[in-house]
Image (tube, rainbow, N blue to C red; front, side):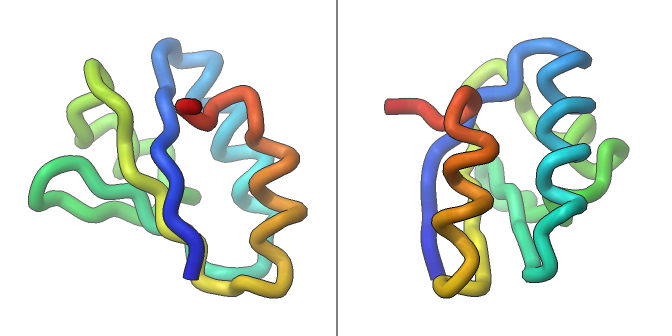
Amino acid sequence: MKKVMIKLSTITDIRDFVSQVTLYDGDVDLSSGRYVVDGKSIMGIFSLDLLKPIEMTVSNDKTAGELLSRISSFIVK
């Protein structure tokens, strides 16, 4: 399991993020505070507080590196 912080600032960011995450076979969860949503759900992402970074949890360690490289522009360093 890998965890990183991401920032989705615009509607375009969310669309691009979801299009990349849906190509990933494993589970991706996004959490903000006490809320956790499926990272492949645009509606779920809109229900989170997008004003601050969101924690992303990737379930499959073997293929997580590939996903993280595809979404590197959203990762908060």
